[in-house]
Image (cartoon, rainbow over all chains, first blue to last red; front, side, top):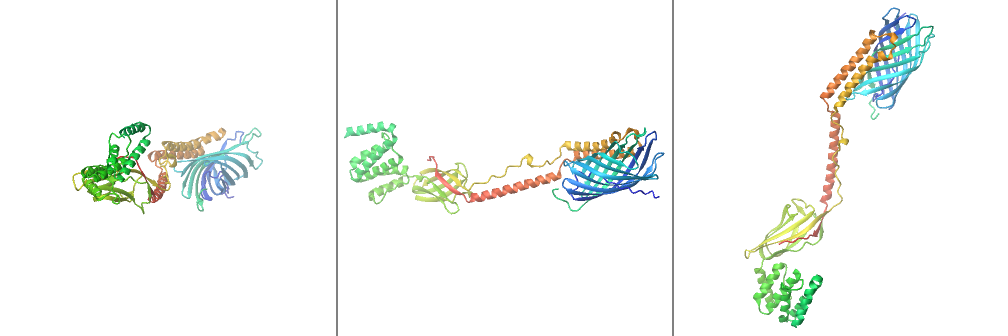
Length: 221
Length: 353
């Protein structure tokens, strides 16, 4: 069985300041660390590895941007009892500009972890915000994002988490049609206690993104 | 008769302070009576009346014109009385007071005209008629001044704005008698500005050492279509700042530090403590924090060194150029309107020697 895992993902939170052009294509490379504690004294299992992705965004209106993307990667075990797993993610997102620097974000993502024991599918709905603070000159932005995941469904008889949040911080640079970003993001999932065991999970990592804006600039948008 | 004259004089004295116009009328009556007697060749009766009019002790108000008229009648009467030398003296007195005075050849005898001519040669005076109200288009019309010298003289006529402005010489040469001098409404090639003007007539007799000067004054204003105001100077709030405030660089530093703090503290705040720290996750967040810190410090240092905003400087230059261009167009339109201005002339008060 191949260890290449197909991971399809989506990056929620289309950029608040957004591109002047209607569409943009982004490629990303992430280094992700997953931590899982199944409870009952089983200890923390850590897995780490690269995840690559692509994303497309479309500015539907001056204040609405939609996006879709996919990510795939492989996480290698870093502790005992941790197992290697492939991760794939696909999703759709939308962001609405509430102010020139603040966007309200929302999205739907489906993520799968495939290991030796099978595949576990996570489906989640997120709702959050992204603040982009402009540096002098406007080419560089500080990006801060946070989101709640009110609906998370995990396959395999696992109950939905009682706490599901994500946060991120980073920098984004724009040069002509090109954009680049470096972001640190973290997702936390706390599951309800079951049989005196409480399952905890988090997925965090560093993402480097490179994008290009497509089409001619839209004046006044 | 004498009692009647005294009574008449007393009446005149009493009347003067109360009603100057009535006194002038009384002088007119005296002059009319004297002229009637002169026409009837009753010189003996006309002379006392005329002498009374020109006497400094006259109880009646006598206008300059009435005085000149009386001197002329006196001169003419004395010629008829064969007292030519005295006649010339009175004619001189009339001429010196009114250089424009002349005798009508149809009404006066050759002897009277000759005596008047002698008086003209003996007396020297220059004069200018008061400027009549006028409205002229300087492109097609001229303003005419009438000046005079009582005999052959070197004449200099000049116009000066405000008494101390630039002078325009309207005539400089020999003259005898009346002369019309014209002015095109320009000073130094430009339309004369509105204001008060002084016309100076200076003459030097060519028959003797006598010199004389006369001045008349007038007001000049432009009759022109309303002019546009130029746009005021740009206010500070109409221009973009050309330098960033020092707080902008501090803001960049804070943004960079914010990114660093976010990357560092997210694992501690968001993650569950039971999952522990360290590991690759700590390295990854530290890397982003390091990038944020470096970028913040670098942009702060750059912002402190170079605060100029080239885009705003260029924008302001464009705004200033546009404003200057619009003002130049307004000035051009105003100059075109001024070039089509009419000059409105009105006499002004003022006495000149």
